[in-house]
Length: 298
Image (spheres, rainbow, N blue to C red):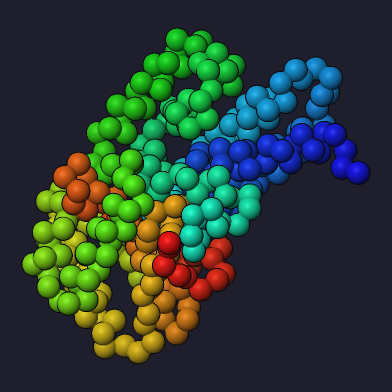
């Protein structure tokens, strides 16, 4: 029979994994942080812990903060833009456990949170995603509740200043994705251009292992010029297929060549319903977690 302390931890594992993924934007980093949390939980004097869930969340958050600080030093020398790792699935709720809860974290939000400090990010996630009290956040970050309230407010302001929306429904994203994809397939590039916001930004991550833009593409003309070039290049090569799946719970285009997943593309709209943010993941290390063939989400 599973020991009581193991049962308690396993009951929290999915939430801890979601928390650490929100903090780090990486599967392996989240898994490592949760494993370290387990090691500390197993060695803790649990008789002194009156609220195991809060204790585990506090420990996991601080491990993730330390991991994020180290990861950011690595990302400073990353080749090209760094993007968070997608959680790919065929339909809502289909992401492999224990990342089922983590798939609710939008890629656009993960990207935008990169502009926050480690403490701002932790305070924002604990408050807005996990509904923690300011007293709990203060205990986690060793700050007063008032200081944590300021951290959350500052984080919200920074995120509001970014162009993509984080509240678009899957149906809205699916409609925008289909319209843009059909316009490109029909080579109606004028229609495709109108679906992009004038202030849109496209970011591609190849991780120095696949070809990708070494800087963000800014403005719809530049974005469409690059996408148009990629489309024409693919037309001249055999074995390309494009299908619709889900990336972090939102519709995404998965492009494969000869059955090998090559890239993931997803969009986030602006307030006017046009594409404000384009995510293009080509780094094979960040696509390795997807095993099955993609299918259109229901």
